[in-house]
Length: 148
Image (cartoon, rainbow, N blue to C red; front, side):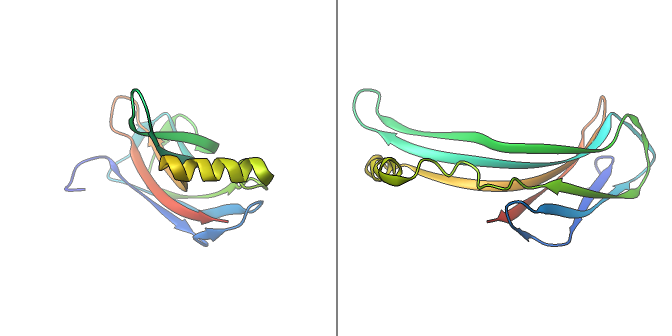
């Protein structure tokens, strides 16, 4: 961090591979250089799908879109002065896969259509921890998770 900022966040997880219907459990380790006034401390799990498609015809070209499929936030503390400390947390994972899309003949037809247009989709799960500092730069940490 080159000496800049208020401190750092470390996320200690019990695992990096998770199943639907389970939970991400761990400890947020807040390391601050000095006591810091903040609006809150939170952990958030987010699933996004980034897709790209090539359109053919007038106005053709490649476009990329990111869509939030799932998001859940767990507050670990409200507005207060924070010191270096450890905060245990647990964030639930949904029971069903997110955005699986239609099945059967329709799903196959859509899959074939996306192959012809050059489309693809990537699903990503991220655990995001943040200390929200009023009037300053937030202290953040993000980790990618394997859920399936």
